[in-house]
Image 1 (cartoon, rainbow, N blue to C red):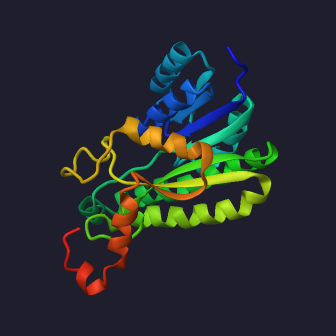
Image 2: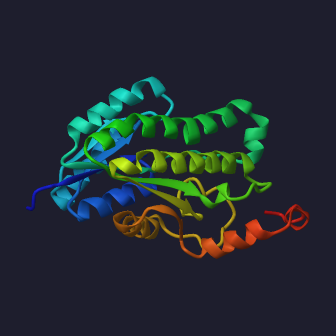
Image 3: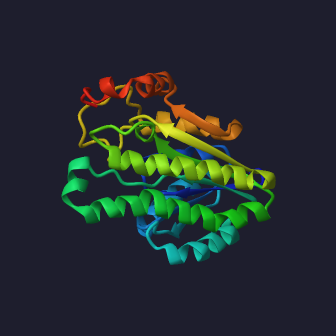
Length: 249
């Protein structure tokens, strides 16, 4: 077996997309750190990666809401990594707009998870990336963050704010060799979207992970996955408010 020279830390390693991306990384010969709250489940996934692909794979406890633990978590990941560390940020929650309006604590938890938790852990990991001379950060955003829609503008606001954070993060750390890829995801067939009506251009987690993996190897900046969402969202953003506000989106 060839020497392992890089490790992908999957933040949200128990998510459907996180597991699918981890399979892609391991198949390419990278070590994998699966980070999340259910360590027992993550360890089962890590064992599968070790058996299937013959690469180092480890589970790591991570809670997006435990901000005080993020710096220690970052140091632990640096110790566990084989070669250069790269990151996939694949966690988040998406309660419905109605549920958030009915329960302010639910809305607060969404903001703290999708924005505060994401910004905190990426900030904690920045010294690790700089210290190793760079690395790739892939962060999963959403097309919902490109224009506030009546049905999910609270969720969209967390993703829009994450996008601004990622722009600044990329600019701040680019001189240290850090590459940031912000993936604007269209609907993916996961637990987040199962309660929703059938959505257009929906893709499987495996197809989404495959496209994201290809982009992670060569790209930076902001991209849509699937690509069809780039012209769709350009058209939606171009609509005048008087037209947009009459649509049931």
